[in-house]
Length: 128
Image 1 (cartoon, rainbow, N blue to C red):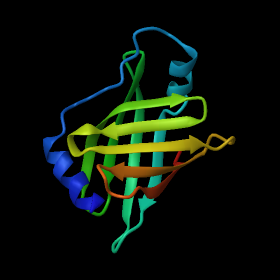
Image 2 (cartoon, one colour):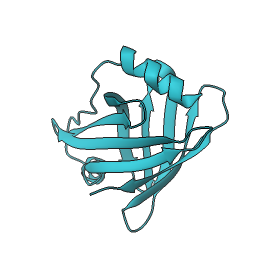
Image 3 (cartoon, rainbow, N blue to C red):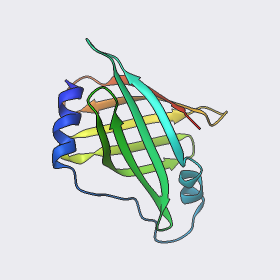
Image 4 (cartoon, one colour):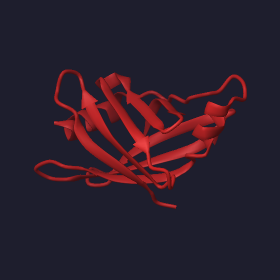
């Protein structure tokens, strides 16, 4: 279910960035997540996900890739970190992710949800 939503959202996605308006501890924490993150969304056919988080305008810009579908650069919005909590959204498809950053800073364990569908686990690991 999520695969088709992600693909449909890729076609409709508009460029979105999380631009910070002033320096703060939360912004510095979010910037510390810059880099590539990988994970696998389980299902009939697992979906390999790559998130690219890059500094942009004092905040970050985050995009999504679906390896199996050849979809690259789908913009994510509201990418943020608040302490251990990491979250982002793909509002065009009603998708929301919330996870917790492990103390080592290399893994985020969380759940991805869409609308009223039951959340599914999606753990992300730092790729670089």
